[in-house]
Length: 203
Image 1 (cartoon, rainbow, N blue to C red):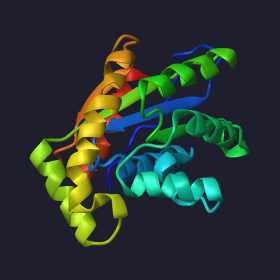
Image 2: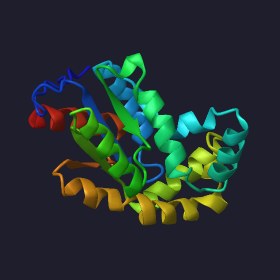
Image 3: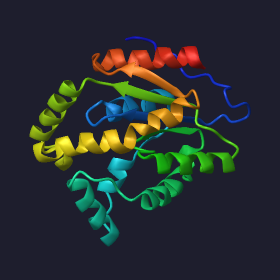
Image 4: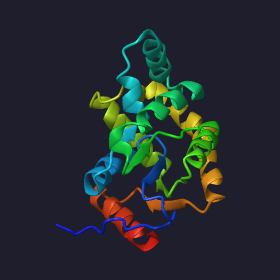
């Protein structure tokens, strides 16, 4: 088994909380890599998608309908939900964010939250995968019954939404020199090792 370097960081001076955002199109492997890095670093993997799918309130029902149709949840709702989640005890040492921020509005609001806490984001991992490969992954996931929003009729719409709303996040974070592109076409283990090697260099 390969030995992966842990992140030793002083990027933010006294801010010792590891804060990493994963960005990538649907099917790029964000969840898989977050789970692996979470286990490796001992910090939580926070997936807004999983949080939204677990809602059982009336508001949650409305959100479920939006997600099932391939749409995003409202920014204000997401920000309230994330503010509560990031305030929990298990986030004291850091967290990996999967699916948040998903829009430029969310990113700007998150920047403000971090500034208020005298913190800043450490890294952004951008998982890059060819469109044709993404489609094949989502079709397979749909056939496995893992996600209702992976159904064929929603795949094209999900990609359009990603390009319109999520891709601009890259420009926002590139302006802050935070983005690190990782070839998501590699096998799962190779992607993970690339991420670990990248942060050994960046830390």
